[in-house]
Image (cartoon, rainbow, N blue to C red):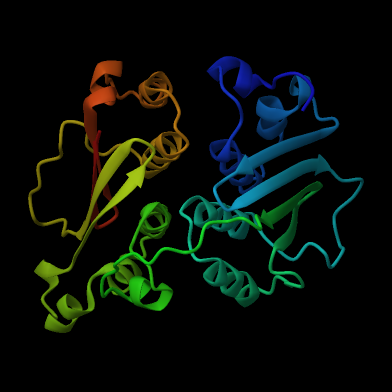
Length: 288
């Protein structure tokens, strides 16, 4: 991209996975003006927005541009949601065969398993994403996984991908689906609601994230932690910033913009965030 866009200038960093997911999120909200203001050359609705991402196994190029008219071509077979999910799977180094299987299940044609081509449009904005699987990609390393439905079906431990998925499901008040997919099967079999909690560890950059999710009832008093009831969107943004390796100052600003006072030193050491959402209690402990 010629010159630096507003985000790169204000935050003093190169664009990364955080921005790819942000652009797709704004696209879902039909907030096209904000996309171009943040990421367009000179903040203008002109030209293209080019974003790139390189991981140990994949190289991703994503292009955003204005279309002359509403896109009716059959090539636009994907959605912003699917593209976001794919980026998260790539970042978490999920099995290549699992990623191929998921794309096929959503109707994405896969002619060459070493390259994926996804296209989506919302209104008059089109997004093209090309994902190249690197020929020298490291072999898949088996990691021990548990007994919940997602782990058993995808043959992997829970990670950053699942943290974000649970936040989305909780926003939609789909508590039952969270419990069915993420509570270990042996606990589900006991049919004891009190024991049905989701608890696992994940990594986000230099941080270990201890995640806790539990259904609660409104008639049971519960003390909200000192930084409780932060929005799930803010939790998501903090997770993505840490996962992308952004500086502590950017996390401090992310929280301060939402009225949460936290020092750079505390972010550097570790901190907690919590949320009571619908009938759910969500807590994340970030540890260095």
